[in-house]
Image (cartoon, rainbow, N blue to C red; front, top):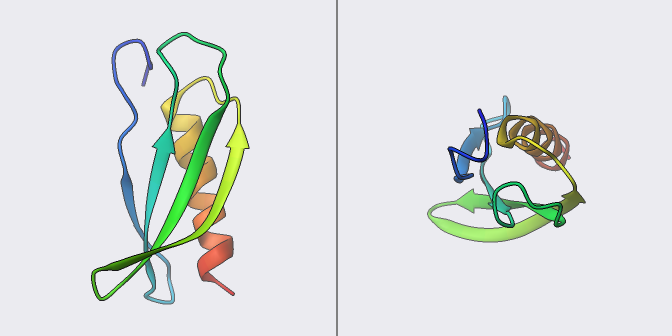
Length: 78
């Protein structure tokens, strides 16, 4: 997936323990070298609580998505 053609979008995630989260992304303009942010929101009964974030410089949305899933797995497994 190339950011020049496709913008990041929120990703819903369900941990093996049944807890749900939404992984959201703050991204600069395509092709820019700006810092990117992954935010993980806990989703309990339709209420969202911010439980973590990670800063990085991912080039592709696919790489950021994988990192976001790893982060959500760690946070929800506590």
